[in-house]
Image (cartoon, rainbow, N blue to C red; front, side, top):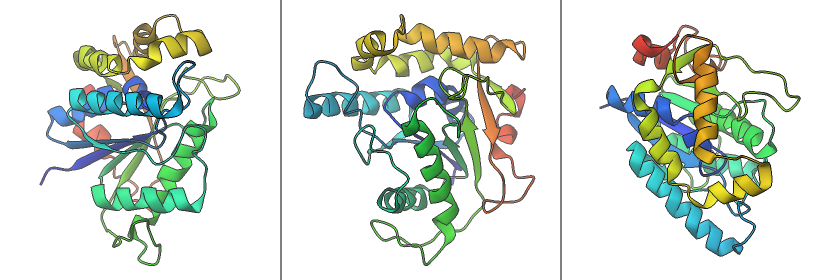
Length: 252
């Protein structure tokens, strides 16, 4: 059975901005890939009502997962309601136990938006609790064993909430899959105007390319995604680093 990588982010399009190239490369070398956004995109509009935008963004997320060749898992809450609370942790842990990833990709612990940072915290705790028989999930599920490595993507904008640059432990060369990553991000059509209006992002796709180019330039690459490995404690051996091993030829 192929090993599994699971990317968990906050909103539809977060994975496509900061993680999708690495997922595509893992799929190329035989990994199964899964994706999940904890929030449904309910606030990502200035024109649609809640139900309309949720339906639009759910379909866009499904379409993007199809471009990535990844298994899609549905969201848990509305935007701005990703809170570090027990009900959300129980539900996310159930999904982690179902997927049983060897690699878990999460947002940066430091980020300009609380939904992103809280997704990180929930993801780390859900993974940490995966093997605890007395931690009850929603729906109930059996504890699972096995080594896992947790990696954090760079924050959107490549800086923390205090505008300080965040440097990765290593970079993955995504130049060969940038066009597919671009197509996946392009599935999120409802977000182009919203981000133009709300955050002054002039070009939705160009913003992703510019960040990928900035990450890559420090290592002499055209385009890259940056990663930091979480502490191994509670997850696996200290030297367990499956992402760098799987993509050794592309990791800098």
